[in-house]
Length: 462
Image (cartoon, rainbow, N blue to C red; front, side):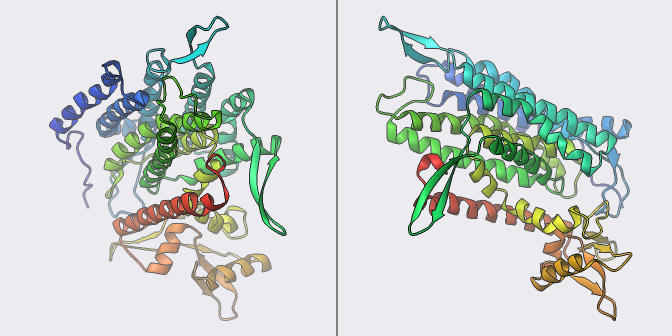
């Protein structure tokens, strides 16, 4: 079979050139009178559109260069052996960080983000938001470190036990600025006693441990099986930010970046600023993921490698930590949490874990089947008990000896789970099922966030 790779200029040049003036207008618009509300978002949208254009063009254009550098691989779920460029997540990460860097003067210049403070003489003078700038730069530094470490993983194929400290190391600048800015370490929880009540406790160092583990989970839960997962999560985060911040702005009748209304509580102002910080990182991420998804869609003409997985995961950790909505962020990771819990027996050595746990491809039927892990010796009692429980809930299929000893089990991943429950299917349909699952997860997350949580938490504690 011949590869169906799309040439670099398969997209209409008119389409790409047509987006350029639109992106330029979004960047220039905040400088034109009257200055619009949320002017920083206009500029962010403009740079995001340029990032989208750059990703669409650069991924196929640089593909042959990556192949010459031996950064290529074979698609295990296809019948052809044409090399496909790998580690092109480095291109996406470079475009993403460049867009964030170019955005700095626009987001934090006096022309767009003037905060007026009153002197003892009664004169209002502009005050530069140094605190927000330090948060932004530390977040950018963590993303750059993640990019470097992710690319090193692509090149040297670092083992899993050595991968785990990578996100923790990259999150150090983020956590240090969070500490320097006296970030909140309180957790509000429900207590069921004689009555239901809210209680707040200061977790101190444990909260920083939790945030470092959050960055580890986020970076390792986004995998190369489908970049659409990251796209859906980023879009969900943006929607959550807009629902929260615009609701607060409408109620207080204030303009972000201008003079805040005296009737707006400090907590509401801080909440709005946190949720308007998040789209600055999510909008360019949506752009690069959309551009890369065009080339990564079935049949894939480019592989992201671990670089893109690390960067997208760290971007989610950044907005979740700095935006103070880590609980809400985890709700958008429900499919990833399910995949992690299902994978635990293999990750922790109870069940054999092969190097590749992708589904098994049948060349004759062009269908995917659940791949299997083989027991070279009878499993331990604990492993057998866990597998029997998973089999009872139809999460895995087991192959048994006549004596009842487990010989094989389907690999414990969400992709193999879909194939166990829904039967063999082609790769394109499996990807569509995965995306539908991610969308359903986001819908459920919004239902919990704005439905169930609203019954017991106030707006600042969700």
